[in-house]
Image 1: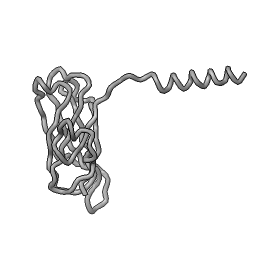
Image 2: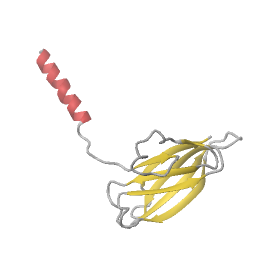
Image 3: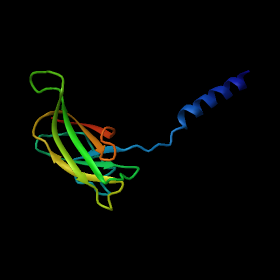
Image 4: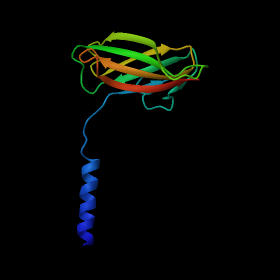
Length: 138
């Protein structure tokens, strides 16, 4: 009986932990320009100071067919009035070069403090978000 129970637990564990092989897009934030040395460095953070360059790296496991990305930065919540809501702060449409099939990197400078969300869309399907990333300016 113990062997049967152990077998069921093992099968249950394997089914729920080994079934996914999907790579997903993600956004990395850094205080310094992305190079092969800084991708896994301790300078990767999501907390920045006002008027500081916020470098970001968007990874794309599958190439975007139209080669256009739309990037938005949305501020979450208010400053002093403590109201909840979203304010569109920054938006950009970028064309990916041939060598940028699986990534895009750039930087942005924000003056206001608060919590922000970066959203990345593809021009192929502009209603579906490819990835999001949260960061803070304090």
